[in-house]
Length: 298
Figure: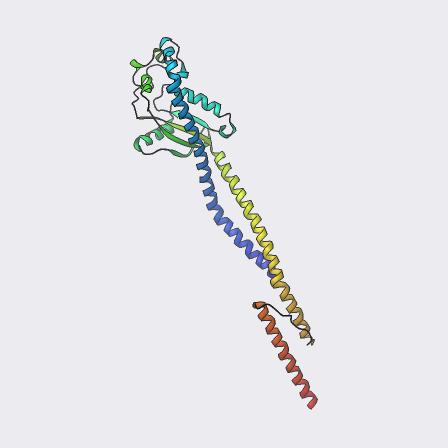
């Protein structure tokens, strides 16, 4: 096996081992980065939702509540949660948020559409048990698919919310006629009553991580090819060609051509080898001359 082949095999083996070891770690890092990116987008969406919630509560609700009180038909646009839900559906038309699913998941909602399932209820429970916990994220199975979720606690921060959620006696008649008296009451100010949760298909997270992984692997592959080419060029120019020249001169000397000279070499290992061959040639030449002289003397 030639030296170039051996060097290339060693370099390729080292590269593949390095890629295997670092690839596992890199995959985990990129997946975590993708999760953080998705969580960041989800939190931005929640901030938008909360801003709309605040606007509806402060600016829209005061104009609609008199209508709610005077009519038997409930006007859902007066409820901030309804506005948030409908606005998020509009937001999903944006390509960056098309795969996001938003829910105000409450164990005791007025609208059963917001009812928390067992998994979401456990999240609300965790927020109750850990008041300093600001967010949770992870994976869960939903609709027979795997989803990545980001959740934040939802607290009752406006006194006006208790008008519809403290007890049935204070709630608008139209609300009671629409949703009944069994759900959505008993809320208290500054208490966690639900969780804002955003779901994203897990394949989106994995796809983002995989795209980054393949991009980095492609860059590393290009760098590796460039390094191999450079190593081969340097090896050929600085080692192999010089060794071939030394071997050619040594072969000429071996058949008796004492006029063959090793060129002046750099002061490196190959240069030392050439100097050794030069000394050997001179020693051989002296030895041949001595033998010739002895033969002539006889």
